[in-house]
Length: 460
Ligand SMILES: C[S@@+](CC[C@H](N)C(=O)[O-])C[C@H]1O[C@@H](n2cnc3c(N)ncnc32)[C@H](O)[C@@H]1O
Image 1 (cartoon, protein in one colour):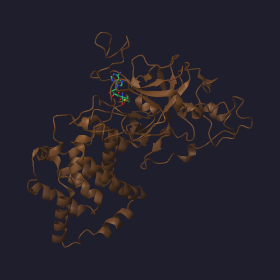
Image 2 (cartoon, protein in one colour):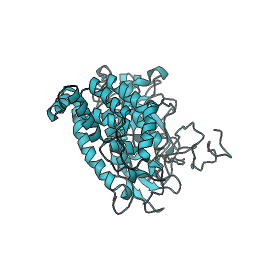
Image 3 (cartoon, protein in one colour):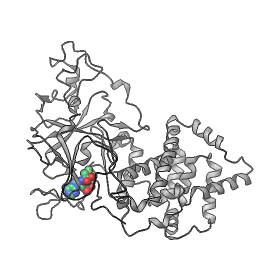
Image 4 (tube, helix red, strand yellow):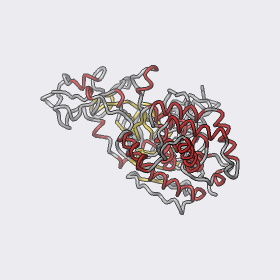
């Protein structure tokens, strides 16, 4: 079985941490919830993270999200059952057994508690399967037998459809996605050991960035490249009160422009360069404004698609990295950090999964929010849907810095993230920024002589 040379993917980029409320014991559990009984192939001495490509993790998470997003009260019961020690221990035991033992009384009564309080649905079935770590078919059989004892109707295909239709449109679209995902995951089950075999996994996605590897034979993982944020369907639309623009008749040539005034101390980019670094966030003109794209307050939004200037390359000690193929002047907008925008509950769920796999790939969009407003804070996940910035490594002496910015929606939740050059950056230099990780455990290979994590130079 082949194991990738370096599959450490991410570290947490936000300084704010969240509490755990849902625990995912192992991916085998999810496979079990999808009907696989071949859990023995999964036990191995290799850490779980070695088995997962960003694509697989993405599919896996999507499936899990559809399970836990039923409704508030259903979720409460499902979550508390999922994390209760009783079922955690139970799952551990089942994971180590080579065949499925007979259903226990406790498992039966757990299923029973759902039959009496929940409407049958595909999602509930999967969630129960995940809690007790049994294939959904077993759970379904028990569900049906309990229903018939209670003299209730058997779950029919039509009933399932009706339940789904009664739920939100979002859930219906998820149902189809779920079926697709299930197919994919079944394939994944069969070829688990081959996942990292270069002959089987050829590069599927074709980023429009150059890719260069003179270190080893590893190919770029299968990712979905995007230039714009993709908004997850569970995220509430921006508040329309914040969709406004300026009335400038002169293409914003005077400082009277109301968008420019949104910026503390005035619009901070002049002649294409950031003139102040103490800006909280940058506000730009947008399609609601009377100006055209030649207005001086539309710099970031017009520079984001410059993908010819970067190269994704293999570093000797940090996995893949990103470097510039042209010199960059201090203060220039370099690129936007894009990915999938998630609402806090989905983000929290993914965080738990990523933590288990020791790979974090998200930014909290928390600029301007205080500690009490965490439930409003959206998050960018760039594990799978991503831009070139996904490959930016950490440095304690970075050449990039992040600044939030707003264009179309000035709704504070929908802030976007821009990387600006902190210094003049010569051609072929690796682009880096400071992840601001507080953990002492971070094994930093930035190589800077002011490295905070290095025993000799560090302060952390
Ligand atoms: C956002 S990803 C960057 C791209 C990554 N190198 C890759 O190959 O996909 C973050 C991950 O890169 C690696 N990394 C980034 N900066 C690093 C550093 N200074 N020292 C060691 N590893 C680093 C860690 O494995 C981290 O989890």
